[in-house]
Image (cartoon, rainbow, N blue to C red; front, side, top):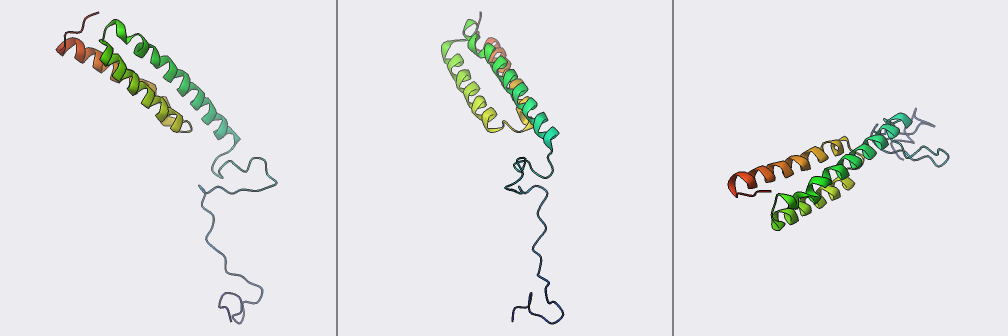
Length: 127
């Protein structure tokens, strides 16, 4: 005798499992939009795509100081900053669906400005 099905007075009733979480993906084969979380709608997905595109455009624009940093910095500093920019690009690819992607271009430009200022102040880098 199974207590959840065969107990007296519970004929035809089945024990229900936990309610699905609002953040858990529910896949329905007949629904083409089933890849969207229950808390997301088509508008949320469109906004996420816009944020992703804007974030990547800003990040690519933030790469220009890194490309032309050789005008005011020695080669080793430009190489290290290039690695920082590439690491940030990998992080941007990983964060492509998060709003933190919009802050990343400003962070890497801040790092570039800090390195340029520190190099000028303490290492006598001149253009």
